[in-house]
Amino acid sequence: MSKKQLIMETALDLFAKQGFEATSVQQITDRCGISKGAFYLSFKSKDELILALIDYFMMQVTSDIDYIVRVTKDEELLYQFYFSIYQTFHNHSQFAKVILKEPSLTLNKELILKLNYYDKLIGNTILMMIERLYGEAVKETKYDLLYSIKGFMSAYSQLFIYYNIPIDLNMLVESLVEKTNLLAKHTTVPFVSKEMNDIFQFKQPMNEEMKEQILEMIENKLEEMEESIEKESLVLLKGQLLEPTLSRAVVRGLLENIRNQPHCKWIAYLLRQYFE
Image 1: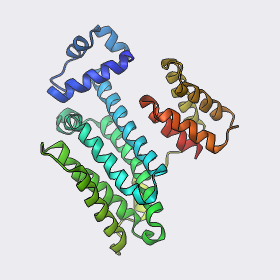
Image 2: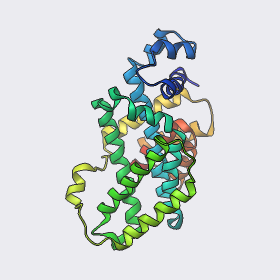
Image 3: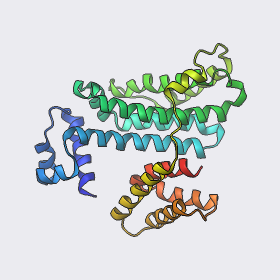
Image 4: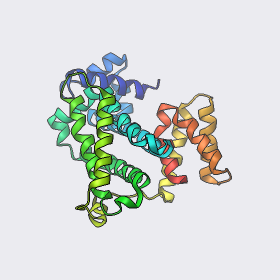
C-alpha cells in the first residue's frame, strides 16, 4: 500500500468515527506512523484530502455502474444496477454521514462542484440504461424516468445513512425494480424535455486533451504497480491510445483485466468511454 493510500484509508476511518472537524492532521499522521511532513507531501491540506476521498469513492461508484450497464443482460440489469448502488451506500454509510452532516463540507463549493460532476456522469449512464431497456416506448418520458431513478437512489439511500436498522437489500431492490418498470410502462405525461436535461447533463468530450490526461494517469499508475497481468494489460492499452492496432474484442479483454485492480477502475472507465 502506498503512503498516500495509507493516509486516505486511515483518515476515512477517523472521519467516520469522530467527524471531519474533530479529526486533526496530527491524529491522522500518528495513526499512520508518519510525520506531518510526509502527510503534506501527499496532500496540501485536510480539505484536499477529503476531496481526494470523494474522488476515490465516486470513481468506484461511477465506474462500477458504467460496467454493470454495459455488460449485464437486460433481464438482470435493473436489479444489478440498484443492488450495486445500495450495497455501496450500505458499505460506506459512515463516510456518507460525514459528508452530509458536516456543515463545513456541505457548504464547500469545490465539493459541491465535484459531486455535481459525478452526478452528471452517473446520469448519462442511467439514461443509456433506460434507452437500452425500454427503447421507443419511453421516447417522450425517458428524462422523467431518469430523474425518478435518481430520486429513488437519493431518497432510499437515507435508510442506510440515517437509520441504524436491518434492511432486506434484496426486497428493497425488487421493490424499486417493480416501481421503475411501472413508471416506464404507465407514465404518459412528460415534464423534463431533452433541452431541459441538456442544461444539467453532458457527455464528457473525449478529445486530445482528455487523451493526454488519461495517458498521464496511466504513466503514474504504471510507476506504482508491480509486475502483473494488470500492468501488462495497462501497457498494451497505453499503446492502443497512442497507435490503435488491437481489435475491439482484445481491448475489451484488456479493460476487463485492469478493472479488477481496485485502483485502476477509473482508468478502465475513462478508456472504455474513449474507445467506445
